[in-house]
Image (tube, helix red, strand yellow):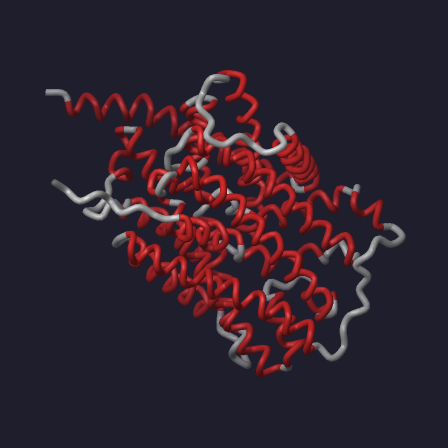
Length: 446
């Protein structure tokens, strides 16, 4: 009798949620927000609203994931709530942009922060090589077995939480000249909070919070998913919201806004301001190490979408294959290959801008699905029901819809490019479900 396949446990997937969220966005996006907003109160409100949306989204996904437990995240949920085409497009978006793009961004940010250790920095070519090397190493680790995968993830995530908490406390304590930033409401803040600029800035924050739904991509490999998945999503999201507010408070309290405007390595700038040049460079390297768990978590979770596509569509069945340990090694290699292409061919900003819009749109449609599912299948067993329903999904839809609308109006190129990717996914669905699927069936008929 074959031994039972080893499953992921609560700590591992909580670590996946935290590590997926705490990564590129929080260490880079403040510089872009400062291009248009200079109010400490408005900036912290941005991160508070982002946390509120993420918690509301997690509460909603908890019901959906517990009622429809299967790996694949939005691919599984949208396919079963709406139509297989919606699930396929979501899987296409997740594999082409949703995970591969952020994986590339996190690896590139790791390399950029590592570059701050050196007085003259590292050349662009060396940084890209470093980013690729990190991704290849983690791909090998996660494509072997659950034991290596789980141990790596929990270790790096615990390290990440400890270092971030230490960074927040020490930077605030040791800075010699705190910045005169007002974190209470002031004149003009009301106009800022209702402006299109504020709504567009929320897309950066939304990207930073991306990952609160990551445990749903591994629910088939989780012990007792219907009971533990909701608590994994809620716990991970709540922890990250607290960390984000603390981090951005320390960034604004320690470093001059002018020094951070438009900069990617915000954490390194703050570290050098608080601790001096040498200690700041060392801290920048430590922050770079934190991004290892982000690359690790997304390399671990994202390929499960490709695996589900391979299991459901004969034309893509190679992606659904697993090794002797139940790991979708081919899907992991495929996602990492796409991410490597991003690293080698794209700029940081070009990936960041359209990724946030695409991922927010994907989760918007999924959260709306809770209303569709309750209407279509009112008798479906729901081991967990969204707390204070329907407020959490309504709050999420309101905040995210407002952000998407203003982003499309103010950044039409990025928005239309995102919609183009979705349209391309529909074409691939038609090919995979009809032409290629029928051809594959014909070749297999005796």
